[in-house]
Image (cartoon, rainbow over all chains, first blue to last red; front, side, top):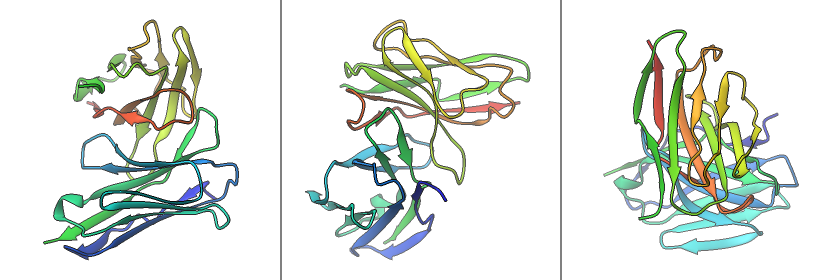
Length: 110
Length: 112
């Protein structure tokens, strides 16, 4: 079993939809959680960083962490074609090591 | 603007050659990392460094070498011992461990 599971997609949604992206994990020691957006042939761009359970909002993005269920989510409101990218979740147990999901490919259709 | 600069963007290597990928950051971060990204796989850690003149092997260090002589620089050498070097290489940095990591734009290495 992988430490972090992420559905590869692709996930296709119409413009303006609310997008929900998810990761599950098995290591209860993970404390720090990140979401990245990666466009094709580019480096990942940090979107959200959280270190506790609950919700964190930044503009159209909301990150949600449920440590009891070992489940994290990223919600994108009013999705735009420019949001089309691969979204990576990442987490850390307080060491040097960040564990990444394989990424979910999102397509927002105009 | 602060950030991480990787160069070159594209690199071609002949069989048996060593090549060096550059990574420079001006974020004043202590920790730096090298990852490899292959299609359908998550990022895999090659090497990391917490401070100058110190670095540690990650999960897939075989066939790679690094140095950390300056805080802002963390070059990666892909040696001829790396059997499958064609991949997208990403450099990252963080203030210290456990804080958010920021990435460069990557170097795509192709063996020809």
